[in-house]
Length: 186
Picture (cartoon, rainbow, N blue to C red):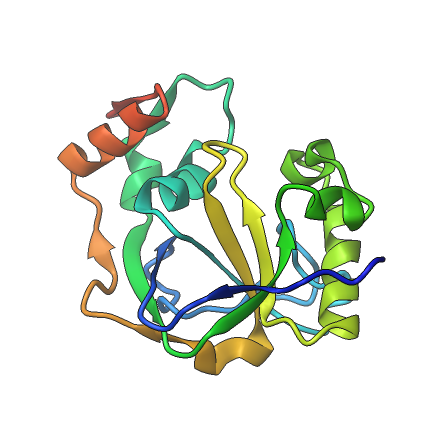
């Protein structure tokens, strides 16, 4: 893959996470060695923390997940909490945005699809062959920026006072509506 200029996120920038309450706001996963998500290590040799630059994007990446379903169920929302992380030192991220996607041998179909083998391969290459703290990519739901931080960047983020907050029905309604979904009680 062709070398690219790493993108930077400056200290003090907030990142948003929607996560299980039994995981801390700073959680590098998956729990097992088997890859589960888009940029997980194919061989389990490193862990990844996923976050978004906007709360709406974190909500979509975690709870909207299936664009063809017109609603977000309250039980799914109640099984999650929201937290904010602050960038503690400059983050250096490998860009899988714009032409960086093609430079890495991917298409946006690969990046935004549900089959993760190609994105996990690229993650392994970025982790092994660059000094990047992680990957900068776009959400498949609103084209906003997300980050996949490698566990070697554990010192790059800290928790804020917005830590493990319950997502209220009113907030879930607004966040669901942002993506044209209806928040429903089962």
